[in-house]
Amino acid sequence: MNKVRNYIYLFTLLSVLAGCSKNTKPDAYGPGRASTVTGLEYNGDDDNSFAVRDYNGMPEAPNMVYIEGGRVVLGSYEEDLLKSMDNIERTVSVSSFWMDETEIANIHWLEYLHYAMDSGKQYYDEALPDSTVWKEELAFNDQYVDHYLRYPGFRYFPVVGVSWIQAQKYCQWRTTTVNKQLALQNGNDDEVEAAENGQRIPLESGIVLPAFRLPTEAEWDYAAQALIGLQELDENYSERRIYPWDGHSLRNPYGESMGDFMANFKRGRGDYAGIGGKLNDAAMITTWIYDNPPNDFGLYNMAGNVSEWVEDIYRPLSYQDFSDLNPVRNSDYLDGPDYGYAYDSRNYETFISDHIRVYKGGSWKDVAYWLAPGTRRFLEQDSATSTIGFRCAMINAGRNH
Image (tube, rainbow, N blue to C red; front, side):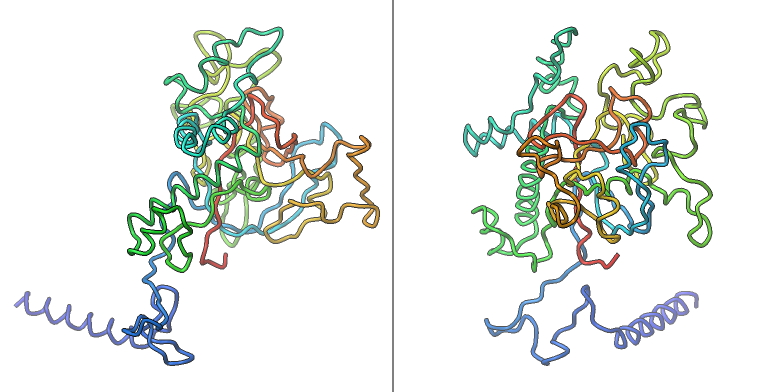
């Protein structure tokens, strides 16, 4: 008797679902069998019919986590110690996107170098990190110069000595490599052939990912704050964050890790790791990319370890000038006497140019002031240091938020 009732219940449920499906409107996941405006059939026997592939959402991007967008106040909540006035608070909205949960590590860059050899010696040489960034005239860092990139013990430490330009080329290579693999796994015959020949796989296929890229400064700031963890009822925040974690302290206030520092940074003059026997962050230089607790978006080391390149060129008044929806500053738009900004770097009247790029977040060599997401610094895009690395980002295609 119970089996009969179960069958009746199941049949009823399927009937209801079937009835509901008849009333649904077409969308990206269920476009229907024919066009709603012409009546022409999709994927017909005719070779000239319009092909509409099945779509189940963006493929999974390796190492990336979803960052739900929203409103945020950019800028630093700390005192402007340098009196630069270049990060005044500004409310903007940032669309949802994807970001690497970790910094790009040495092993990831070595993988890149392995395949870079296929593109010729010049391309390989241009991809090599600058290992001399560890050299200092009055310091003995030879072990890092010779070993940091290639020695297995440093595999999952963040790559450094990489310029903004090199990071951009890595993003391009990663896009091509990941999408080729996706096409080989999920594509039809034409797409597999295109992937094998190094040709573009059409976006219409739905089997490839958008381009990997550097995050914008606004995206990086938003992701580092991770205010999603503080939200209470009806979009209210109980507090503001100075760092990518709760509270105003640099130490963990909870559980067995209570008292431990939340980031790898320089605690004070000459103090990189604490006292032997009780090291505070146990890292004289960089550390494991999964070290320290992730923030509320699941991102590791958004403060400390290494600072990170972002997309934007540096302008002192970027926060004042750029759009309040998905802001970015990546051109000399608004520069010039007509706008009141006469940046004349050619005649050495200013250091500001289109080749100066922003980097965010404190590093292993920085004091706590630079751990605040709103602080900002800049460097020539072809320069590299032992304190700057990067992580990739990606748009959230096919969504309106």
